[in-house]
Amino acid sequence: MQLDDAELKMLRWLRRQHDSWPTTRLIILFCSAASVVYAGWLTLSDYFDFQAGFFLVMGGYGLSYTLGGWSGRPEVSLLLKLVEANMSDRKPEDRK
Image 1 (cartoon, helix red, strand yellow):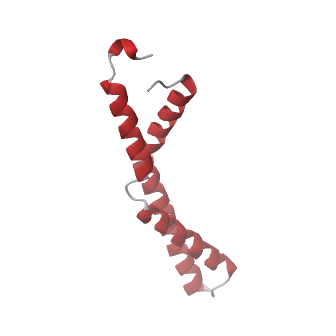
Image 2 (cartoon, rainbow, N blue to C red):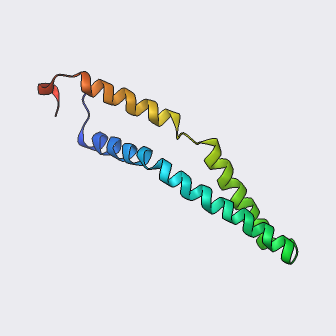
């Protein structure tokens, strides 16, 4: 399998995105938990209004997104493993 420059650039972008997921996951998790806590504080201090509901929904969405995809996107992991295994099996003179 020969990859052109655009495909190699896309592969490098996918690798960077996949490798940065643990850091991104922690940032989303922290911000989502802070949003839920802030929504709880707004509810307890005043009353449940649009702002508290917004922070509660956004925090819940961020928590479910992060916890649901804790290990990243499996299709990207599989694709990267397959392409990198195929590239490592080729002879050095066949590589670009």
